[in-house]
Image (cartoon, rainbow, N blue to C red):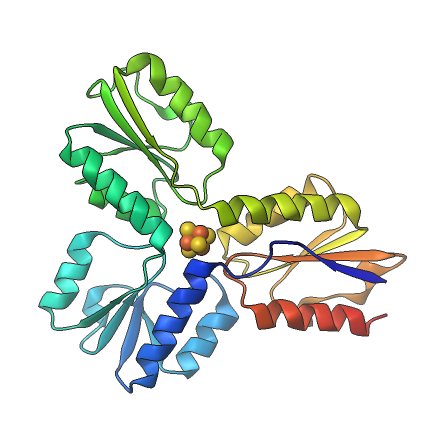
Length: 277
Ligand code: F3S
């Protein structure tokens, strides 16, 4: 059975950086909390806890020590609040997300109507909204745009994990309603490459294994993309989830993993598949 790994698979730069910063903070011996799980992967969160990194739901749950801001970023007020409470803040906001924050802030300060393409209840979008002074419009598709925009000068920013098709659709719908339109393509290229290579993998193998947390949105998206081109797609968190019957009669198996899947987790799955041969 041939095992093929997607060209772009597994943990992304922003999440890896956030993990490293949290681990470094824990090594200093300080009490370390993250605001929400640092990574959408239960095994990685458990491993962090063993190293002394706890998950807090709100700032009230963090009495002292270090607060790590995850790669999604947060509203500026949360960082200010944390500092006012005497916490040491380690800002692990992904640099790609920070660019979206800056773009939203600049357009809002320039008097533009800021339109954010993305999911309204996603923490990253909430952070971008806050950087736009809370006055931005969030739309997940062109159909959600209001008939009349608050002004004819419009700045568009997009959630880093959105597709280019979605951004294009929103921009095309705004164009006739705007006299000036500034578009910031803040989509993270790693996401598109990971999705494209998952699809190519799915088209070329008998069975696809997608590794990542069941609570990880981007891993679930990879599952959907592979399912569109392959009928034998399975989502696992670890090697223990593999079922040998899935590979019956298969000559090739493709493995891919979400942006929040640590490399050792993906490698563990690959080794377990290879051991089945
Ligand atoms: Fe950053 Fe892209 Fe990952 S935005 S957190 S590198 S998916």
